[in-house]
Amino acid sequence: MISNSITKQIAVTAGFLALTFAPGISRAQSTSPAPAQDQSQAAPATPAQHEGRMHGAMKGLNLTDDQRAQMKTIHEATKAQLDAVQKDESLTADQKEAKIHQLRHSARLQMVKLLTPEQRQQMKANVRALRASRREKQQQQPPPQAQPQG
Image: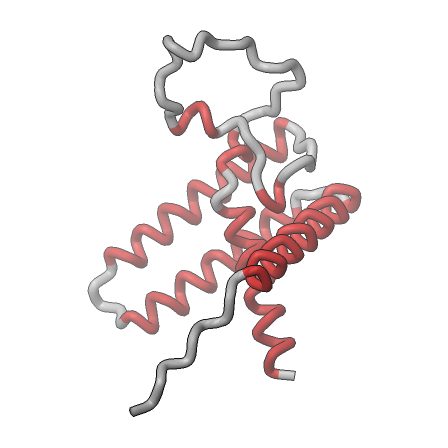
């Protein structure tokens, strides 16, 4: 029972983080392939170049321009609030952690409300795939070696 609760809490947090930090929400997806660049002239990728990509739970949702704009607004407002909490020296570490959790949860709920039922289904499928991938990676890792007592 406790394990199931922890798993759900981790899943909700992972889903929220994927939504909150998905840089692709601020730009429209390009339907045409990007022009090929000469590798010798290609500069390192800048943050602006990463903004058009969808990652994690947001991948393949085909958000409208209006949805992207609203999500960008939510993301920016939440980021400002998170920065303020981090800089607030009157809060203890536990209080900061609780406030950050509350802000992220609230932002996630606001973003999910913007999605159509079809987009929500796609996001749930994406989250399930991310969880399965994470579970598979964890199973591939060898268990920690027990330290000999002595």
